[in-house]
Amino acid sequence: GFGVKRIVILGNSAAGISAAEAVREKDKESKLSIVCAEPFFPYHRHKILSLLEGKIKERDLFYRDQDFYKNNAIGLFPEKEVVGLNLNKKKLVFKDKDFIEFDKLIIATGTQVTLPHMKGIQKEGVVAINGLKDIKFILDTSPIVHTAIVVGEDKVAEEVARIMAGKKIEVKYFGNLSPSLEGVEAILDNPIVEILGDSEVKAVRLSNSKLIGASLVIFSGPREPRLDFLRDTDIKINKGILVDAHMRTHVPFVFAVGDVSESIDRQKSLGWESAQNEGKIAGGISGAP
Image (cartoon, rainbow, N blue to C red; front, top):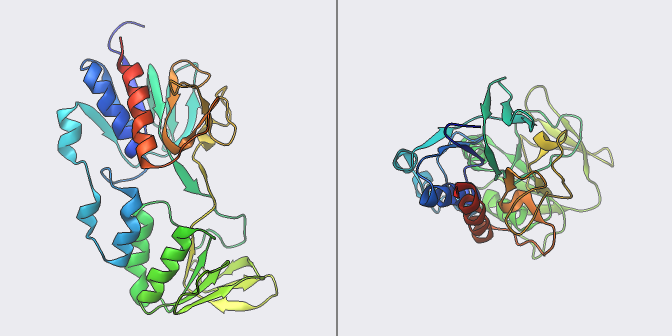
């Protein structure tokens, strides 16, 4: 088509920001937009547990502000949940029925905690550690929490258990805990089968029918790439979105970078730096004439 090229980046973290900068290095003319699900400016995701622990202030998390978007002529569309991608019409469809059109799309949506299919999982007080919103919820509610339950055998789960116990909250940890943590009880053989309460969590039922009262249930894993909105498209997916060395998917005008993507031909490295590097590659190609 004629007119100004439209580049849309989906995701406002390491990979997305890096892609945006790389586009603008080569290309000042294209219309550049960033769409993201969160209401915040970009922040260091790996530091959110330090916020939970009170080691840093919320403002210490952010590494880009309003000026970044203004100076780089980037349109920011926050709090937009993408529910579909139409490759023929080249448009992303949002939950609120709105949409955005593009000529090139860079997907940088990262990973998310997949909550188990379990009765009561939608209740208020069930939190998946996906970002700042979840940490803020935990901080807001912890003064009135007597017992918190932590699920997910990984470093994040162990850190969360340790931090919550440090707030003088009784913690039940579902998983193997090594070494043991003060104020944390590890529960091994009886997983949670149901979450009880009216609209808010009051207790959990275990597989041995035992009930444990708790007003906060925190999940930290397992994590999977965020790509539900691609299910009905031709974009090829294995665990993540499959890309070549240029971060291109099987659809030539769609790229995927960061933890949401998976390399066709080499071992994929995850994490912040890798996401930034991949964003640079895709942004450079998208911004090229």
